[in-house]
Structure formats: C-alpha cells, structure tokens
Length: 252
Image (tube, rainbow, N blue to C red):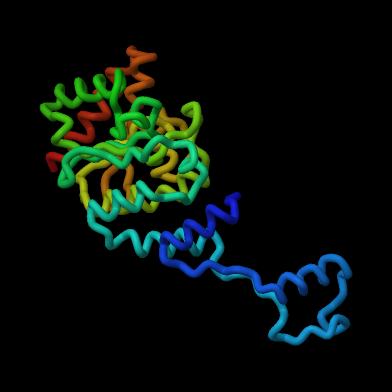
C-alpha cells in the first residue's frame, strides 16, 4: 500500500506507536551506498552504523492497531474512527460515517461505503436507498432502531468510486470491533463489494446468495444493495428471499 510519510507518521503517533526517523549519520551512509555502490568494508563502516529499516511495516501497524482497538468501548471506537488518517480518504471526506442503530441488535446490515448524502449527514443509508431498506425492514416487522447498520468503509470514496483494497484493509479493524461489540445473530452483506470484503472472495453475488456463510462464527447472508434494487426492481423478490433466510437464522 502506498502511504505518504506524513500520513504514516501521523497514523503511528495516533496509535501510540514509535515513529522512526533517520539519523544524519544514517542518511550519509545510505547516500554512500547509493552513489558509490561500495561495500561496508571499503567504506570503513562499523557494524553499528549500518542502517536498518524500521520493523513496523504496514502489516505490523494493522495488527497492532487491531489489538489496541479491540478493547475500546463505543464512544472511544467512534472517536478513534473519526480521527483516523490511515488512508487518503481522510483528506477528502466531510466526516466519517461510523454507523447507527441498536448496539445490541440481532441484525447487522453492512453496506459498501458512504455516498454523498451520507458523507454530508454522517449517517449510513439515507436517501432513496435508505427508504427502500426501511420498507424491507417493515415487511419483516422491524424498524431501523431494531437493527444496526454500517459500511465496510467509514469514509466516502471520491465520486462514489469502488473501495480500494488498501482502504478496505485499513478500515476493517473498525468494522471488526463493531461486530465484536454488537455480537449480532446474523450479518447481512448488502451488495457485491460488501460481500467480497467480508468473505474475502471474488465470486459473483448471484453465486453467494441463497446460502448461509460464516463470518468468524456469525452467520452471514448476502443480498442485493438497495441502490441496485432501485435500478432493478425485478430482483426485489430475490432480496426478500434472502431476508427471509436471515430471519430464520435469527429465530433459531
């Protein structure tokens, strides 16, 4: 993943991790290696002077972050997400869209990423897609206050482009922490991108529908995103079948 040095240092500082800065002597040695391409013996460099790369690469940062975030409560988790600068989406968002609803819900709905209106209001699934989702919930005897709803990404991608793998990877720790706090009986992945991100697969949405998947011990059902159903109303019946499957899992 590509990350600017400024963003990387800010991220490390926010997570309480050490920020590695090269010493002047290190820079001099690196320059000698690059320009002269000589061995340490010819340059009379002592073993202690040899430059070592910092041990904390991006993978280490993600692991350490998940360990730290896993113990946060709801206010701390929301505040940490709001101040996150782990990827470049932090420079283009209006605000983070953390999630909303019942924090003890049996149902957890997960979408792809905030859109323009969500970015403006700070709430997931508003607008026409949100109204359709509310109607589908009503048909199940549920209201928005009965469920919790969030997105894979907490920040809106510019121009509503698809989420990038590095963005999903960085934001995943927050979603995992939300799931651990809620402990839902079922997770509903709304749309292809949410399903791919959660299940780590590239299978078609049609092949993922109609069955129960496992997300770290929690049943997961894949269905269409409400925005897709607005464009393709003929598939609303298929989505209803998916929700009925999820309802059976909740009732077990």
